[in-house]
Image (cartoon, rainbow, N blue to C red; front, side, top):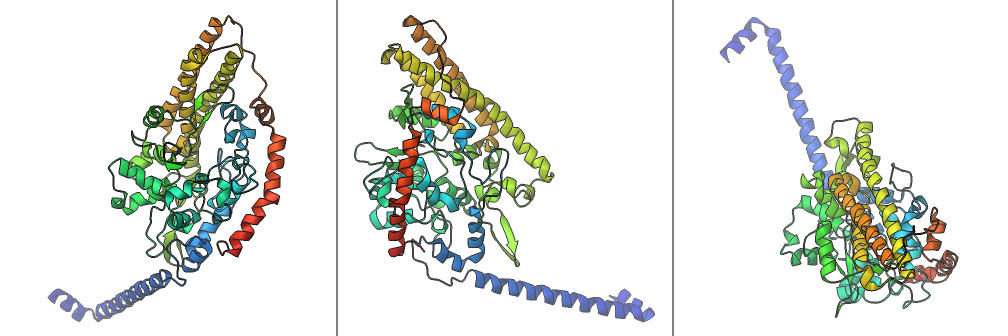
Length: 498
């Protein structure tokens, strides 16, 4: 201090300089304090509800009055302006792109109609329009059970609260058409009082309980994936004694493809009987959570929301972007938060993995579709159930593994090593199934090549699968003109839909 005083006495300008710097420092600290205060006040205003929300309020528009930033970003899920190499947010007819699919799913709803998924905003519209839900004429008509609504709307937890979980699953899909009207939104993942993330679907909680886990002890970071795991998982409809299409996760033996295969085999479950091969088939649903856990991002604790709903800043406020979408359409806020490479390099890295997986996937689809057709030929030649049992079991397991690998859409990137392994085993089982069928045909005295039909287009493949598409489309249009408008009219009259 004495040295500073001595320097100032010798050089008076130095004193004025220090005085000036002190004023600048005080001024800057004042600005910082003011900014912090303003942000705190703004944050308090942002989180102060303007509209009272009921415990199970399903109308997303009402939540939007309290949380406009999150709501406006959620509304962006209606955008249809992005296509990556294999996915995106646009409507794509996957049966048209891959005519193997109607053969692989012959006898199951997906052989009629299967489009690439769009944003959450279209959840209700798409399930109403798809041929898979049929063309019901009344509440007790149609091919699908009420359980099919389970992941489509925040109206689902509302109805479960009102009527009970088991009761919700009962009946036909058409029976709840006037009640399930709001697309996937706020109440699916948030508590209306605290805005904390919550599990609104009982199937996930029940699966955790059967594994001896308490989902209530999950951390906030874990919840940023678990709310997605309510729906983006493998599940089935339990029709065993006392249950009517009760939504259940097959996780009791574990969550690998072999664990769930063993679970299904142990209870002798099948989703459908293949129309051509007569194999007892399993249809993988959306095993996105399971495959994400097998990959490096899941193993390092990177959540679903970190990449598909990254944080963003607007007006000085940091919030979660609810425009749930492919990270490839938002590389700067998703991938580049952690990775320093250029955008084109990161996208190229994703495509390299997807290309490699697709190469094996295409081989499986070709061999497995032929296996179904050859099995059908063996039945025509008089094969018995005893002769076909081994081949049909191989077809069942090959189909399950192929479907598990492709049904979650992002698995080729999320866990490319595991998905490559699974597809490799599916290809091996497809070859083995064809070998077993050839043995059966030789026993029946047939040694020539099996004649295969032309299924090079969607239309030709659906004809081979035995579908009358003209009738299915005509019936669906009748449903959309008659019953669907009644659902919407009733929902608005009851205040369920704004």
